[in-house]
Image (cartoon, rainbow, N blue to C red; front, side, top):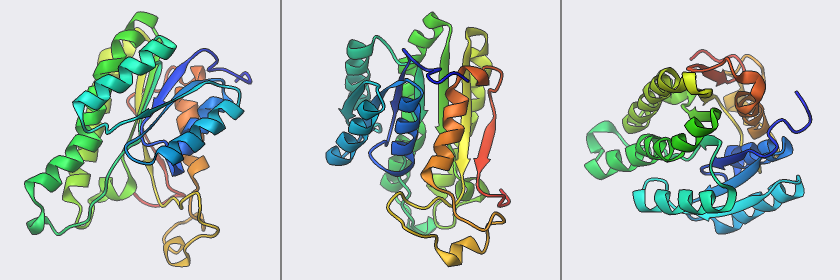
Length: 246
């Protein structure tokens, strides 16, 4: 891999104001990629991520908006296309994870999770794929989650949405492979926040590796999937979980 294998490419990373999303944005920038930094509310966090992107020598655009809202998606993609000409890499990282017993889950609870985790991935993919098809190159990386794939306790909408995203990912990988576009999904395990100074001992007990993951561990896998070297990897789920059973 060259020092800047993604030079000239542009990535849209949803939920990139902190933690895993921020780590992904910075890792892609280090590879030469321009980054559209997105968040729904944390403007300061997104600006911090953007500053890190520019410090790495890439260009950044802060696009504040809720990926669950179609008007926001259209506005952000239009702004990104006006600035960079198109999106070459889409990382659908944004998610919400409300915990509530199934029998107390309302339609609004269900719709909120679905709109953010599943429908947003559909809308964003649909918005960026024409450019990728025309360029004969593209990368889509979606997110699942170890607990979601196992079956989220008191989080049925989360599990349902993430299984839906896995289905969407496989479908996109089949339909767009002929255009030089890959679609994969990353499933993180127990990842500590970027501000945590040490692992939670109670959580480490279940991890064969003996440590919790860090945002950079996930970002490294995403960066590989977005690289030219990953051209033959598509339709795959990659777990980043220190060896925990999925």
